[in-house]
Amino acid sequence: MEKPLKMIIEALLFAADKPLTSRDIHNAFPEFSPADITAALNELIGDYERMERSFMLKEVAQGYQIRTRSDYAPYVLKMLRSSPARLSRAAMETLAIIAYKQPIIRQEIERFRGVDVGGILRTLLEKDLIRIVGRKDLPGRPLVYGTTRKFLEVFDLKDLQSLPKMKEIEELESDEAQPPQQRSESAAEGSGPEEKNPSPPAGEGSSASTD
Amino acid sequence: MDYEVKLEIFEGPLDLLLHLIHKNEVDIFDIPIATITRQYLEYIDMMRALNISVAGDFLIMAATLIHIKSKMLLPGPQDEEEEDPRLEITRPLLEYMQLKEMAQELSEREILGKDVFSRQPPSMQDQLDAEGPRLDVSLFQLMDAFKRIMDQTRSAAELTVQMERWSVKDKAQLIIEHLKERRTLFFHELFSDDHSIPELIVTFLALLDLVHSGLVKAFQPSEGQAIQLKASFTQDMANSEQHHGKTLENDH
Image (cartoon, rainbow over all chains, first blue to last red):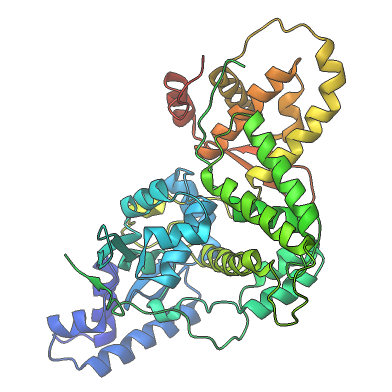
């Protein structure tokens, strides 16, 4: 007997171990049109919102995934007895440089940070947050780095275009004029409505050839 | 001194400059180059005195600062169009600040495995810190705090005969023991049992090592407040640390 599309999709999302795209669903059930699938997905997002569930349907890494709401993080963490290892500030900065400036070679990253990033790159590669996208046509054929799909998943990003916009230098200037006590707060507010393009999305790697 | 610690320094010359600009509350577009250069060199001296290996990049920056300083002293051709020599450091500093800002924003997103969870946890989920980022402190802030303690104890401590020899590893273990009991400590409390300058230094190096290996987190509840230390290890990690002082290359 026929089940409603929305419920079928909910079942698929529940059973999936990675974000599902509407194409994934369409490929498995060609009888449903991509438009209907997307509409059903959006309906589910609204349903969970309205029902005030402890979980939500999020669009990440160009797919859809059921995730718990952040209000419930302390409870989930308590059960998982999660280990407190984390990304250090240095690793976060390196990751941000790669995310915004990709494709990028190690020397360029080091030019920004002014320190050796070899160890950090290894950690980020191990955590599958960055990957080697090719080699640059320079002496020594240096490796070119970019971010992974997992990076998008972990940082709640739909795609690279939805990276937070880079704050303009002029805004940093006005920040700098404030007394330091306020500055740390304004830094936490994040970027406002700037219009600068975020960063080159993947596929801009004309200088990088995949080996 | 009978120790040598090769700490991997995650902070670079730009971090140090930003620290100084912040500390002196000066405008990044009008850096008092003489003051900043002098303070910069003092930090380098202190890092060397502590046997923290100073990367070449720090020295290149030192040379750049001195060069800018001399350029500014020279009368030079009073050419209106000539660029402010300080731009040589202002530009990379701004670019770096911009990226730090973005790193901050990224880490404030709803992070999978920290703020939100999916049904099938990717391995990352147990690898990110369970605690939100409070204000982390940098190497240079720790050095400032340490210098204050050194200044306070110098006169008294010099009179004391050094009875015991401490290794960095011993002190690291001691810090871990303290933190197991109390979970958080004030920075200055770490040094309350130290009786000599070498002992203070060994404690400080042990702390730096623990911070860099991620076992201990140094933070400030808010800007300008006393630095505190927090255990960020589980019981198991602390025990395994007991068996191998893995991050220390050399600690006799």
